[in-house]
Amino acid sequence: MNEREKRTNDNRGTLSERKMESQLNLLYTAGKGVLNGVFGKKMPPDLLLAEFFRNNRQCGSRDRALISGCVYALLRYWGYLRNLLPQEWRRSVEHGEVLFSKRELGVLFYAACYCDKPDSPELKTFASVYNFPPLPRTAPQVPFMRAQKAADVLKIECTITESMLLPEWLQERIPDAETTAQALAKRPPLWIRIHREQELCLEEFKDKNLRCVLSEKLPGAAALYAPKINLFSLEGYAKGRFEVQDLASQAIGAVSGARPGERIFDACAGAGGKTLQLGAMMKNKGTIIAGDVRANKLEELRRRAVRAGLFNIRTRPHEGRLWRDFTPCDRVLLDVPCTGSGVWRRNPGMQWSFTPEKLAEHVKLQKEILENFCTAVKPGGFLIYSTCSLFPEENELQIKEFLERHEEFVLKEGRNPLTGTFTDGCYRFNAADGDCDCMFAAVMEKSAR
Image 1 (cartoon, rainbow, N blue to C red):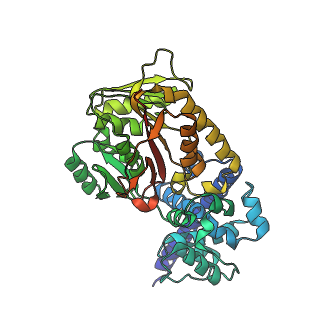
Image 2 (image 1 turned 60 degrees about the vertical axis):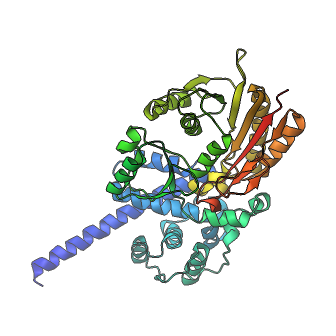
């Protein structure tokens, strides 16, 4: 090699090192900000990352991919990784103040990437920059075991167990906490509901190299695994062929029993994922009244309904109670505000900033909504209550207390569309039932007299 070639290679190496250092500086800033925001401000990580990227326009697509992947892995496996920290540092982070250095945060990212993907290319970067010992590529299959292996290699004394993805107090409050912890350790797929022209949808996904798997449990439901593009930019979405909607959410629509020609009230419609499904089930015949206290969400629902070609949906904001001129309906859906604990694996780390006070607030609000809108059901009609919560207080216990207050309602027996099991009218849709979110629904019939 001549002197000129040597200088060229040296310059390339220097540029590569500078780029690597710049990326890690951005990662450190983003990681520190997200940890502070999740624990200190109780904000979801996706909003915090979006704000970081808005304020750091220099981040290219590779920077964004590196930062997002590492930060989400750190939060997803926080229950394991927090054990790598001294107790005082762990306590400071979970009170919203990251005090340790870039290298110490690098240890957490190094272990997080290993938990996520043992062959992750980021592992070499961290090992090179921080002179960390290499982690074995032939890693244990289960993430908590990989976290333990990382601790052992880094010579950090701790014991990591699978249940640690949930805080101890939540392990005692959530049914089947062990299964929930297992689900939290896995990235969920993105579920869609194909509304029409399924073959055209599948062809477009194939052209875009999107791995799409149709569900065997609900017609039109499909899982997309690790999509690398913005689904909202696809022709299929623009033409209303599909909507983004989790499988468990679609199961709630399925047990609602909506039929063409009925009059249905969706009292907490929001942006209308379930509203659009009900409209499709009704085949544009009959009427759906979509209400919400947030008028801006109903504006979004209107746009989505037009794109989906659904013209049986009417939107009307309310103030948390029925209008005086309201005519009772065949079915009323109360998809009530809740803790969102059933979608924690889509918002990794949020279980660590959750408090019992939040649960109590939601239980109180749900009770008020049930009382305010149960009269919207006509005699012989049905009331469908749903949450995306893991807590019995928001689910079975809430319904038990409601039925004790309202003898005119009884649970309507049915079959769980994801498991095939017969239920008394209360449905639990769990991650293990179809690699989906965790949701709850209760279907109640009102006496015809």
